[in-house]
Image (cartoon, rainbow, N blue to C red):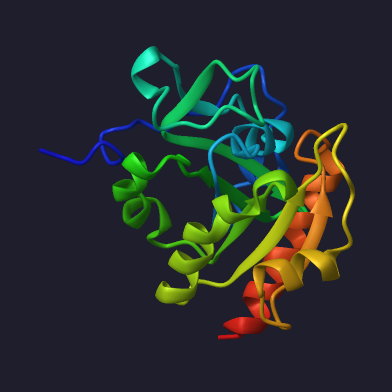
Length: 209
């Protein structure tokens, strides 16, 4: 019996999508890269993947029920009614032939057992942080530090919250100097793309081979 992750089927090309150059020209071999998007519950992982995916994203959203009230803190996200129970999946093509496959992890601790499968083969990770609850991203930071996967920290700025400088977030989370820390908006395509490019550059610098 396969795992919950391996049993999921990645959707094929959307007949309504605008085909990329590497999809119409068989002589062009795209560079396919896997990126993981991680962070705490309700930090914006699904929003990020949806904002940039050029295909209809695969989402495993489930309605939240009373059974999760004791484990999922909705204080900062009172309007949240669904949660990711397996992963989010999307695709974005950059620079014509650089294709990024995005895998969003579930945020709740009870789903962390799937992280090993989602991370396998990835070149790096974006760790999303919410300044209202910074400790929520510690498990992701600890995980990627322990497995040696290059990562960046992207602070998802929510409307109505205080803005902080990257240096303040770095100090609060004790992020090493060589790890990029960015302020971004997971709803804005350009902002997300800039974060992904930062991760790709960081990952290449960390593993130049």
